Length: 121
Image (cartoon, rainbow, N blue to C red; front, side, top):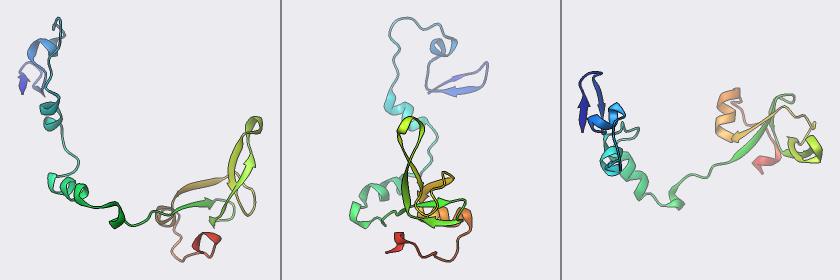
């Protein structure tokens, strides 16, 4: 890894590449560059995710939240612009809906008690 001392920038590029004066083929070791980048997850966590089987993951349930009904609702199908299909609330046909993971919607909109819907069946 080389360092540009004039700007105190640490980079995997050499000095000519940093200055924009590199000519011809630019040689970059991608494996080293990826290792030098800041990591979001530690190596132990990545290893644990790699070893976990698909059957071991908890299922993700998607849901639709209607802002007019103020609850989780079954999705409906409505007409959008130029006759294209558009997701709407299955109860009141409102376009003001949000779709996402059920647990995330419950947490974000403060729906602590499970609201009985057809999604829970």
